[in-house]
Image (cartoon, rainbow, N blue to C red; front, side, top):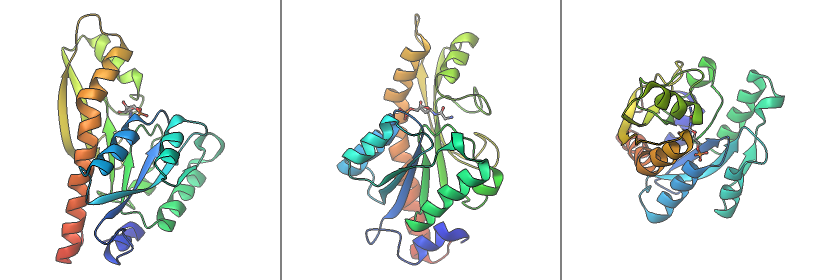
Length: 223
Ligand code: GAR
């Protein structure tokens, strides 16, 4: 195992006895964060515990959602920091909270290879398209759905994947296809992709990855 994150899992500071401490990184409305909070409350996520929310932007609704759920939430403002200071601010918080898994849920900043290499297969992201379509630099949020509509695809969807040094390039964990319908706008399509794919797959993937981390820890094999 490498990094402080892994040692947090190994040394037992990973949470409620047998749960991996999760940090959710957000930049906006936080509907995916809400899906994760609800999934923990309903027991879909049982191997992990959402222990920290970090927003790259102040004033976003995701912060309200965290507050309502009683989860510590903080802002590390991307706009007023260098990439280096932004990432060291995040790393400090991850260490402080003994985080074992980082979930990017509508997080609109690209993390540097220096950052991602510290947490191999300990960062997951939800992307609103079927990777390798409509992904990589410049494809985020509504832009992804606009591009899918412009190209005239009949199926789109969402992907949950591990994060590595290539934007949207890490190993795929889950994918789900969603139909494009006549008359769709980017907003309508975004909503359908969220409802039918993202809000289900992200919690399921989080549980799968946390269970894997716990199993690896229990075997003592590490990474
Ligand atoms: C979601 O559709 C998510 O997949 C997308 O932004 C939206 C955030 O919504 N993420 C990206 O495009 C990242 N490349 P939310 O804040 O309501 O979860």
